[in-house]
Amino acid sequence: MKELLDSKDSHEFFKIKLKVNTAILKFIVFFIISLSTFYFISIQFESYIPLFTMQTTAEALHLFLNLIGIKNNLDAYNIIFSNFSINIIRQCTGIFEIITISSCILAFPSSIKKKIIGIFLAVPIIYFFNIGRLILLSIIGIYNPSIFEAVHDYLLQLTFVFLVVFYWIFWINKVVKK
Image (cartoon, rainbow, N blue to C red; front, side, top):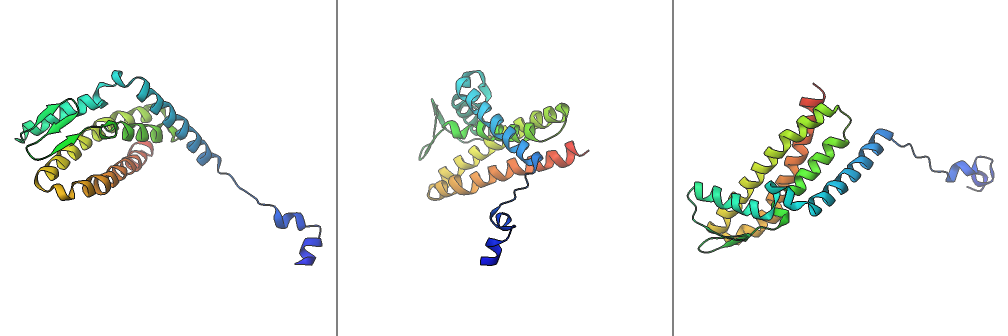
C-alpha cells in the first residue's frame, strides 16, 4: 500500500472518475424542471384546470356511481353512502399522475408532434383510470370497508404508478420509435 501511495500514480488511486451520460442528465434535469413547473401551475391555476379539481372529480364520481346504480349523495368533496363515505382530496384527482407522465414525455428526446400525441392520449387514459379506481374504491368501501385502506394505500397506488410507467414505455416503443 505504501508503494502505491508513494508512486507518481498515487493521485490516481484517490481520484474518482465519473462518466456522466449527458442524455440521462438532460432527461433528469428537464424532467425535474418540467415536474416543478407543472406542479406550480397546477396549484396556482387549479380553477382553470376544471377536469382535475376536487369538485369536478367528486361530481364525476357521483355521476358514474349513479349511472351504474350505486346510490350516493354528493356533499362538496364527499361522496356519502349509507355506511361509508369518501372524501376527495387533491391527490384523488389524477393531476399528479398527469404531471408526472407529461414531464416524462416532455423530457424524453423526441419530436414535438410525438410529445403532443403522447400527452394528448395520456390525459384521458389517466382520467378514466382514476375514475375507475375511485369507483372500485367506493364499491370496496361499501361492501368490505375493512380492506379499503389497504387497497387504497397500497394496491391502487402501486397500480397507478405502474400505469404511468407502462404508458410511458408504451409511448416510447409505439410512438417515438415508430
